[in-house]
Amino acid sequence: MIFYMNKHFLSFIFIFYFTNIATVHSQSVNYYKLTKKIENGYEQLNQQGGQFITFIGNLCYESDLKGIGVGHGVLKINSNYSTTYKTYIGDSYWGSNTIFRFSNDLTTLNVCTNRDVIYVYKRTTAPQNVLTCSLIRKDTQNNTNNQIPIIQQEATTITTNNTTNVNSSTTINSNTSKKIKCHWCKGTGRIAVDDNAPSNLGQRRLSYQCNECGKWINPNVFIHYHKQCTHCHGTGLQNL
Ligand SMILES: [Zn+2]
Ligand SMILES: [Zn+2]
Image 1 (spheres, rainbow, N blue to C red):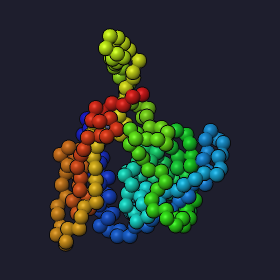
Image 2 (cartoon, rainbow, N blue to C red):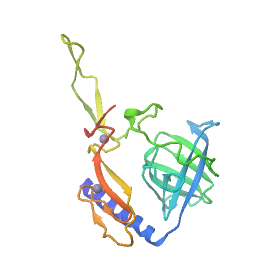
Image 3 (cartoon, rainbow, N blue to C red):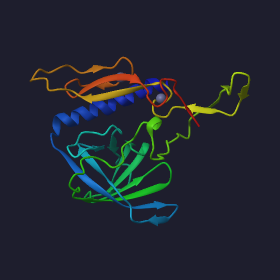
Image 4 (cartoon, helix red, strand yellow):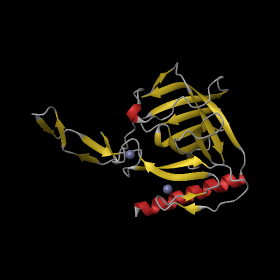
């Protein structure tokens, strides 16, 4: 039942999204420089870096200088929040359900994360030679930046019996390795990829529904496919 609802929710979002591409041709790319981090009420100044954010219709997403998404996902405007701000909710570098709260003139951005940290960004001209976001999700396998993977609170905990061969004569059985559902692929072991479609030379291709995830795909805009999750190597589990 949950899967059924997700399918329709995704379809709804994507129909909405493509409707907007069709009717609103303009997109704008802004650069936001990180000015401070607020953690437990304490402000930390002297922050480095910045993100490009592209706005199209009622969506925004982290992108490069040219407006091509960096693969973090999309946030959708949410009018249930105060109209003092423009509030977008969705997937970002900081994980799912991140809140991007912009001032109405889009000059200030507060990123509210699931970890009770607020990042304050100011719109400015991007420094020369800065072509993309300073924060881009990396494969945790190759990660050298101590980026903490975000663990979803509702993730189920699975205890596995981990057998380790220390040497040829000794075998230790331990119960200590805890695994949770991989948050990148939601435990499915596979990840959907949307690449920009190449130019179709004026030939319109019909939208279709992906038979793996149920998402509606406009093949004039995206090439959509699924691949093995690189974070859990297709197991659907990650270490706690
Ligand atoms: Zn995974
Ligand atoms: Zn799919």
